[in-house]
Length: 254
Image (cartoon, rainbow, N blue to C red; front, side, top):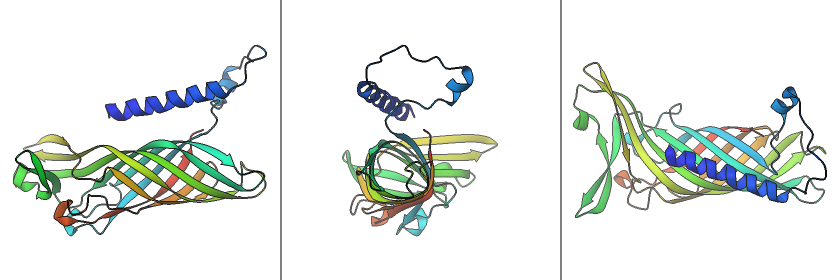
């Protein structure tokens, strides 16, 4: 979480510097806002801060790695610049952001890396009873992966007003994995425990896929489908070639 917070802070700092650089020199003293106006004022940035919330689905994963829909949540936070093509209704949307993803397993399993002479040999699916004992009650077991994403979309707006009406967008995104971990919450003898293991688990460091979006500029439904496998070829658990699909809703924060 500390690295995620630092990256978010860096994104806001860079975008603010760009906004200051692009502003014209002030010709008069800035207008003072009343408290009510200041509360509703929009940040003077040349883009949109977008929050995506969704649910992950693994396609082609082993039966033991089956995931639950509700627990497999996704949060994407991205700063997007919109470039309208002339006077047309077509716009290009590009930017940079974070993708914070969780896959919640329905079985009492986790992923464990095996090593041979200090070299990673495999990533295995392990039953949690063999680690914490048969009397342990497993409450949650998840795999989390965090990415730096670069989205690119092309949208068409229905209507003459670019700030209103229906928007349909298609495109894609490329992401770079910067951290991953498993987390297990379990209970035993009336005590609660949480174990987090940081590792990359042979996940692909680079991901890419296609996106689709429909809605208004401030609210939309979206879909993502990964075009490459979640794990490196032949190195995932049981040789899995699982791919990722995500569906969710999106909000424009400003």
